[in-house]
Length: 475
Image 1: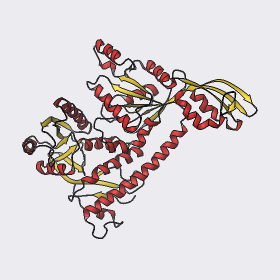
Image 2: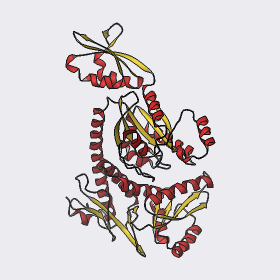
Image 3: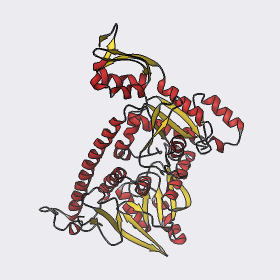
Image 4: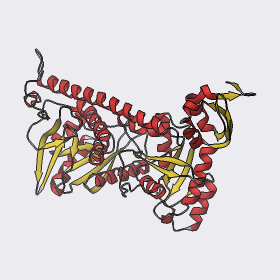
């Protein structure tokens, strides 16, 4: 393996997926290292990493003219859950009210000084902000407090790095991390070029910072090429299974999608009660009540303030959503903010261009709702929803029936004359609907098929040359 490229100024190496795709490995190393008791705090650029020993953390948000205290506090509670998922401990949730964020410090100067005293007194290791901070704000706050400063995006990237298990997910995570890191490089970083070992390092008149940026951009370009290659491979695999109905699970993170996938397909996929426990897409086969084989995919959960560049990096994974015949929008209906979660999912689907897809609303975790009147209220408010408990197996048969109806929807009758040399097409036709009649003709096998409308365009595209219309004339 090639020698690692590293950003280094003391500290211990923090690998971010380097070398997993056969290319040059890049290990981002801490530009500072702090010790507090038995805890060592490392930060990989601005994508900081939690050590095994939980860090004492403050979570901070800003109430400004476009937000309310209630709204911001709810966001901070979610951010606190993210911090705990990343391995930290949350000591307190803090709010400041001001018309707009301070350009230099995000918070007001007085609040910065006030928190400095608390940080020293209580031995705080990190402060996490709900909004994405600018590089200047991070630098100024770290200098003022002497500890690391993170934002929501940095925490999400850290969790993604923890959960990425396939090559595709690792490439996507490293790409997102480097794109996040690039504008945050400062002169505190030292020689990348020394780690490269003479491979096209500094150009004439180029500063060290420019060299570091160029090497990061080179790595980004390599990862983008690798991701395009992986995407092509994924599309080839997807075309190979186009003959089966495809369902995709979407929803807010920790809504229970992986548990539902396991319940419907016996997939044995890891399901945890934590945010972003699923990062890699899993596709499994199962059978609808009619006996027809179908596919179900589980994708990364959505989240409030999920940065657009993260969605872009995971576009190949989320392509399962775009290619699905029917979406299952899974909602943790026991969560007090489930309506807000539903809106976030709809907005994310809109960004992906999938908002108009046939969608089945699935209310999960009804076993956690103790008041029968609340369930009746949900049924009145959302009559189209299917109420289930994936963990307890409640109403799963009803869900499968709804899935079958959602896929079949309106049906259409099609007639094909399949050449005898192409009879392998029969398998896809059979899997796409109900064969009503077959008749041997001199030119081929006549097949009359009733299929869901959602499958018609696919069948026309693949077998339009065999399609008949009217009194049997080729279409």
